[in-house]
Amino acid sequence: MEVDATLRGVSLPARVRVTRPPLPLAPALKAAAARLCPDAPVNTLTAAALAIAGGSVIGAHLRWDGGEHASVETGWRGRGIEEALAAALA
Image 1: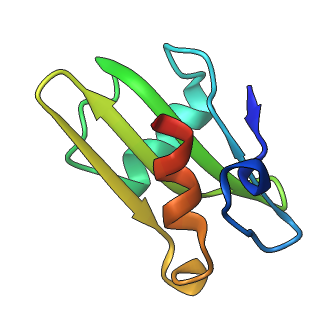
Image 2: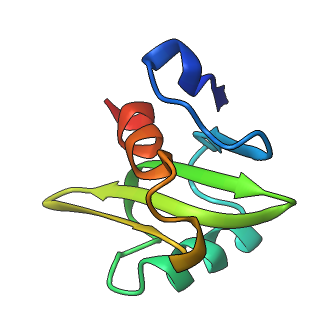
C-alpha cells in the first residue's frame, strides 16, 4: 500500500515514495530492511514502512512487539523522509 505523504502534511522529494508493504516482507524487502535496521527482528515485524527511490529502499521504519526502529540512508536524511515513514505507521 503506497502512502501519500502529502496528505499527511509531509513533503517528500519527487522521486521518493513511502509504502507499507504486506507482511511478512518479500525476501528483497526483508534484506533491505535488515541492512537499514540490523538490530530489528525482521522475521517478526508487526508493521513496516519503507521509503523507495529509484527502485532502491532508502529508508525503513519497522515495528515489532516490544520495539521499533527507523533509519534512512545518510544522503537522504533531513528531507522529510523520516517524518513520512513515521506518519505511515501512525
